Image (cartoon, rainbow, N blue to C red; front, side, top):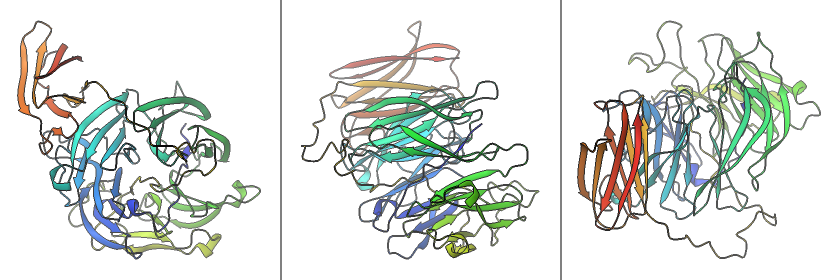
Length: 492
């Protein structure tokens, strides 16, 4: 079954890109001044959420998996701009409402565009990415490319990103989901460079995974890995807690202390526990210290996250055992869902870490289980290492590329996502035919930097409702005054 992947990252106060958190039921925290200040965000998500700020700590955008009242009322990922409004073209991005299925990666090619990666833990949309361009809509941004699929298999709810050792490129890491009859221990690493997104390696290491759980863990298994920022490979597996069915806590989340000497693990069962491990101990397993336990409310524990103020915050959900806690009813406000718990001195052992339950008030907003899955955006290059490839070397030139057309059909949504990039020309026509040549769909427009669906750099994106289509193959044609691109998809 799944291990709790402790691929957490280390922060310091100067990390401005991580200065603002948006999570839960309209909760927000701005750490930019050094003293955390609460504000109201526009989301209402029980789990997966991400956010990113500029180099001065000003919020750029954030995203969360949540129900949307538009054309697709089921769970999906919604992107919000800095005014807490849905970003242009920012709806209907793949996501399923779990806990660690999103991550934002800056494009190494420039400082204005960002990749939003998402995974499918209980669906087969696999690993996908969308692109946000902050040059559009007067700096509020727009989604210019949506739901390009890189893998189609189900994945573990444990998506991570780590900056490459050269200080510019990025690794995206995920794990293939398993089943009770077909467990696996496959880890995938993708490398994001100024020129491409590359599937670098598939590595088999650690315990066999028989579920789609990774951020959460039902069997008590806790494993620790080293990650090589040069090669993208995991190594030096340490089993902190072995599988211990049937009587084990329901592990939910983990976080490292700022100096990486302590590991904190939370549970989300009844009772709820918070554990500390000393990673410098000769026997890490025996160093386990129970910092906190609570029996009511049920499943009180949630996500752990190291913040820019070098404190670790713990989210909680309130469940009274009767009413399903998401979304909260308008009358459900209490100390459990209106506060975060805080580990004030996480580098210290035992009670000296100063854990204070329900001590950080969210200004009248509410929390569920999730906290932002933000990586360390300012992790420096590894100076003097073989993979510090940028030292003394001129920036790589981005090679010219021809136009590309991508189509992704999502059967459960009955929706087609059409994306194109490196287009030439200004006027574009999108046409959809069945295999007999019958015209099914047609639209024409002018590509412009400010238009939803168009962007600077020759990008195009369009969603098409396919609920009326019969089963079969369909042809997608995208034509400008200078070129014509064709692709196909199948409705099954």
